[in-house]
Length: 141
Image 1 (tube, rainbow, N blue to C red):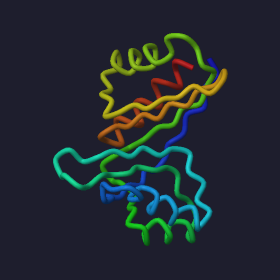
Image 2 (cartoon, rainbow, N blue to C red):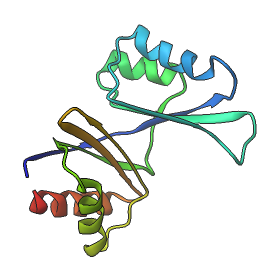
Image 3 (cartoon, one colour):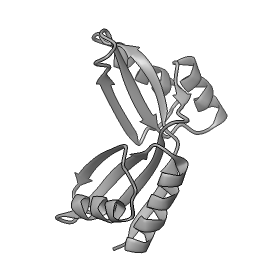
């Protein structure tokens, strides 16, 4: 199976859990023409009234300055892989099984199919886990 696997830095910031909280963060990035491939936002259950948003990628000096101005910082505790490939029934099960058999623990996984293609974002706790996952997934492909 042909698969494109890349490492991506993840940027994150907290936000106020109210209408417009997320929009304000994303608008700051949009003003600087940041073209995001992936956004995930959620409430912080342990901190009522707050949320967190994760985005990727943010590249280029102007865009990085805009992200920092909006409160975003590149995470040092979240290591991410992006996979692009043809969508197939059972693909998620296959990907997660090959990682499990190799002893790689996922921190998180988000995936979406668009027509015949899919994009999968995998998060790991350590760089070594992300590197091992990349090797294992490339061997699978």
